[in-house]
Amino acid sequence: MKFVLVFSAIIAGAFANEWRLHNNCPFTVWPGILGNPGKGNPEGGGFALGQGQTHTYQTAGDWAGRVWGRTNCNGGGHCETGDCGNKIQCQGAGGVPPVSLAEFTLNGAGNQDFYDVSLVDGYNLPLRITPIAGTYRKTGGGKYDCNVAGCNADLNARCPAELAMKNSGGSTIACMSACMKFNTDEYCCRGSHSTPQTCKSKDWPKDYPAIFKGACPDAYSYAYDDTSSTYTCHGNPQTGYEITFCP
Image 1 (cartoon, rainbow, N blue to C red):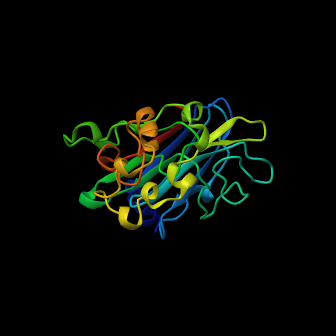
Image 2 (tube, rainbow, N blue to C red):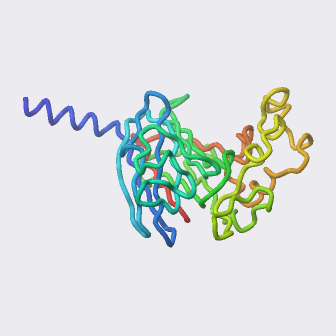
């Protein structure tokens, strides 16, 4: 029986992905974690991460979901950005936009991972995804094969005034997407603009996604910004990922 238990643990570990969340910001960040339906919410969906700290956990090899950073959370669990319903452990709730997102689908089509940093829901913090050395194998896919994805720029500092979300002190704490701000079919890629062919900058009154893309060329700037934003990776045997806030 002891042998069976140990063997089972080895098998379970072999198919686990390691996650390292690192806070390089000069303040505490509260990561939020939301699994896709049926995929689970690791660490209860959130925790506090002090300046310079790293928090490590594991997920099943087919996990899919998103990770984001919340800022200025109080004792009651309410956060200035990325709030998930006034609780530190989000427990299945998503973050209120605008918020920068790290998105993952592990062991998807072709037995590979898909990952990206998305600003489609707006921006609140710089964010970087790095595959952990020794856990993956490259397959000759070029720039988007197991490489670093992210947004290193401070978009809050260059956010257009009409998109800026400010705190009570008047400081810009997040930058809304054009879809969130204006809620039009053109900016939200819906209705007659719901395909890659019809959701185009020529139909936007102002090319706000270009501002996001110019600052963060490797991140999603709008819904159909796939070709220059989606990264893939094959595990060796399972890819681990480091997510760094304020890289």
